[in-house]
Image (cartoon, rainbow, N blue to C red; front, top):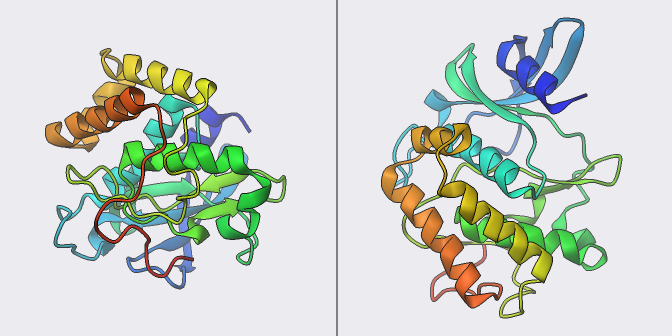
Length: 237
């Protein structure tokens, strides 16, 4: 299904909640969406169901989910499921296409076979300042495609990167990925729908910090190394 049709269905489809997804720290619902002879499953994360965090402003996690999807679209990778912000049964929230995947298959189980995927995710997570890249947040679908989910605690102005993907630390970034990062840098300096959307989702300081992290990667041309604080999320899966 074309991306635009998926986004329209997510944004405008009739939503029926099927229940809470287990294991989530915030209220996360599995939903069924239907409209115009189309239907799909989706994940609905309402703003009012977000657990308060000391270091992230209340009510912003769903906005960060949306910003992560926009960033992945601007960069061209990695695959983040189509995501919209909309009103649902419990108010405003992020609504994301549900990815069917085997829960026993995650990043640490397929990393050695797919290093190029890992490199892209590692760079994306640095630019997005992902504070929670667990192995289980990387899904392998039935067509052998990798999807990245759970981006609620991203884009902080302080360095927060916590990830299980450190095997590339200190290595040179491949030229093709540097090219994509340069393209992103250029797009972030232009006025357009994507940059305007990011400005609505993130604070001005958070957008500036995003640009600074990207500039750092392009200046060093190497994969980032762990910082002095806890660099791996818990639990790692």
